[in-house]
Length: 596
Image (tube, rainbow, N blue to C red):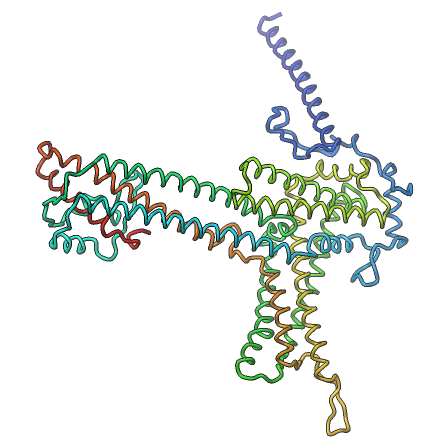
């Protein structure tokens, strides 16, 4: 045989053997991964550390052997989940109530009701906790600003004493010349190389046209050692403050934003802004009308008169009913779309309901646990760190809320369908979702639904308030009015008359609903203006300390150079003395207006 052909056959044999070996390794890894998921270990397995898992793509046939068949998933009464699903469809199991607006046998309507009750029944309280966190954060930043301001004032006072100790007062000529050069608009900053620049110019260019008297009048021999000590003290303070600010920024970025994306309001905030554009615009229009009719007109009336307050709520009432109708149909459509996708793999609405909620609670518990663990690792003394302490408390509350919602769901399913959701066979439904879908795909679909359900809940709160106004008005304004004591006609339910003192109490309820609706209390989520401005002020104050330190360093260097001017050219000598006079003036006349 040709030696080259023999070599090629050997290479093919080696390649085939390697391929078979690799297949055995991959199969082993796949089985290992499937087993990990089946046993209920963290579904977000860290596969980055497993070389063999880097290119895994989940396929349904990979884990089919690990899932329990429908006939083997039975409730505590011995009825299979497939049969329970059929009984619901036949109307043999009532899952709603007479007061529930929807088909009482419809699992998909039940899904909407459960989301509203389990996630958003106390949305106002959740929002108040977040507002308290933001207020605490703003107070902390204000306290830090005040401390830095005090430190800077101390540093400036010591620096001025240092200048007055060694330098005589600036001559009248130089004072006038310096004020003319500096003017009202000078900016003082550091360039990328850390050098001082004045109106974006170097000192040499900035002082190029000045006509200063170059006499350096000193009170006593200048001590560079004393100035070095002063600079070292400033540098120590600056380093301590810089570390504090850096930690604050890190904690704000990592935990304050996360605190605004806690269960359950995270679903509202994580929804795609483009997908909910209509709801956002509609809510803005609705709330503008509400505020105009329910509050602005009341304030205007109150300023002019103490008589009964008369209000026409027809526009508001019709807008609310239209909004509720649109939201109802939109939610129905999106829930239907979600269940159609889930049914392709789970084959049954009840299985979809159980699997999805178990899946949702599980990923939220893992997320919450990771954040709490991260906070604990960041600080051994939580009580000594207000940001971490507040964030930790909120996430511990979140942990409790997730557990309570999950427990309520388990109790509901047990009471209605007699399934124990802690049963391993039942929980295989949840594991199937990890195999079929990526987390992001399911959660994005749910975010949209949850957003619309919460908006619907808020609009219902406004609707209830409008009904309260009608009821109150009917007490003071009879439904039928007499005309010439003979004929009666029914009053218009939208034209209300309420005593001003009574309406004053009612309007507080409206303001409470409006305040609970203010999910964007922090202006722009993730980029809060007040906190961003506070951090900018902190950095600006820190910049002043850094620049003061740089001026003193430069002054020290120029005074050292002045001791031996024989080594300088005439031009260098001029620039050296100009710099000394200018730096002394900067310290004596230090102004906040010089910084940006």
